[in-house]
Image (cartoon, rainbow, N blue to C red; front, top):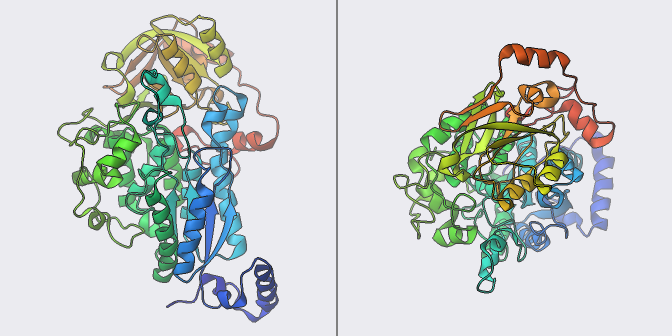
Amino acid sequence: MAAKLRSERLLENRDRLATAIVRQELLKACCVSPEELEGRPLIGIVNSWNDLLPGHLHLRELASRVRDGVLMAGGVPLEFNTIAPCDGYGNGLPGMRFVLPMRDLIADAVEAMVEAHCFDGLVFLSGCDKIVPGQLMAAARLDLPAIFVTGGPMLPFNEFAPKGTPPVMSMISCPGPGACSGMGTAVSMQLITEALGMSLPGSGATHAVHGAKHIMAKESGKRAVELVEEGLTPREVMGPGALRNALVTAAAAGCSTNVVIHLLALAAELGLELELEDFDRVSRRVPHILGVYPSGPYFLLDVYRAGGVPALLGKLTSHLDLHALTVTGHSLGDNLAGVSCLDDDVIRDVDNPYHPEGGIAVLRGSLAPRGAVVKSSAIPPEMAVFTGRARVFDGEEAAVAAAVEGRFRPGEVIVIRYEGPRGGPGMRELLTVTELLFQLNLADSCALVTDGRFSGFSRGPAVGHVAPEAALGGPLALVEDGDEIAIDVPARRLDLRVPEEELARRREAWRPPEAAGRGVLARYAAMVEQADRGCVLIPGGP
């Protein structure tokens, strides 16, 4: 080891001798011998395993492979856990409000645990929506040598379904461990982690049940020790070029709109400039070429068979920063040398895309002065420009009740407000409402606008992240039933067609909703920024 380890530097002063002795005794009780503490790096294995979620169910076994790799390379593996939520459990329920706030709780918990226990390097294991970004934020904040082992997608249900199974079943059923096999937020963030250079090439699309995933975990453990020796840290990897590569990947893959708030938050941790408009600028130039549900007919297993994320990035080289460094120690361009695609329909060429623009569009206008986000790749062409009368609901529950009672009508724009980061609080994901629209055969004749979020599996003109949100008195708070709302995705417009003098009258009468009472959500509401700034937490409040 060329340089003195961080764990040794923190304890080298004579007045810290007692602390070092106590620490050695505590680790001895955990079966770490004094010999292992002499010149060997302490590698923290940050594991989000639990037996509640399929995306994390298998991470205990992967962590064991990571441990093997750390030991092979001469490091000392020390594992601890983080919490890990799932959006799917809470859809349509009040508990969904806790899911996005857990992203920042995860980042804070990892920071506190690592700083309190003198690690030299880190291996992060995660698989689902808020855990991958929370761990990325922690890695950026700590800036210790680190590498990610993403858990991989689950196999699609249609691999096992009997003939004649309705297609919709193959889109929602979960046959085993791993993240949902379409382009939901979990898979989106795993692909983006690889594009950022923070996981080994091929990690993003290698499935949870594949033996190659276990080999990658072992190799990642070995690589973590090497990263400590080389002194290569996340801020060197996740520079401006890597961040641009992430935006290019999000556009080309048709990723979930949730990646917008997560990448904005990651950029803030890295101290890099990133704005909502950057996503739109990239989407205007980078075509959507990955045909994964709900923006295409394929699943992640098809992507894996076609060559995985390297094959996707290999078709985007004209848009990527190939000089960006990765955790391999090599540039992205070096990693992509010799890569080829094995299926040119799953991953199309840029001159034969699924859509000529990327999968995420940012809309602005009188209803969203600071912006709103839509997954444009999942909108039928005939719905890209839509004008309808508003049906307004204060909260998701009221909208779900109306849908179940059959009160939605073709031609309406369903408005769900007070579900933003502060008003929810917690910015719930509204997949239940979008799925009800499809079940009611209204997805081709109704639109949805909210200050809440949407799942990556949402389809149709579902416009979210409206900022400023209704709870802050944004224009969404002033909409009334029957108002005309115009959505124009090609023109990037979202407008409320109500005279300004009428809006002024409504604004005078508007009163803010009652604030959250106590606990996690109350603290979150007091500190969280708007969606166009990544829902980051600001000490003392925004």
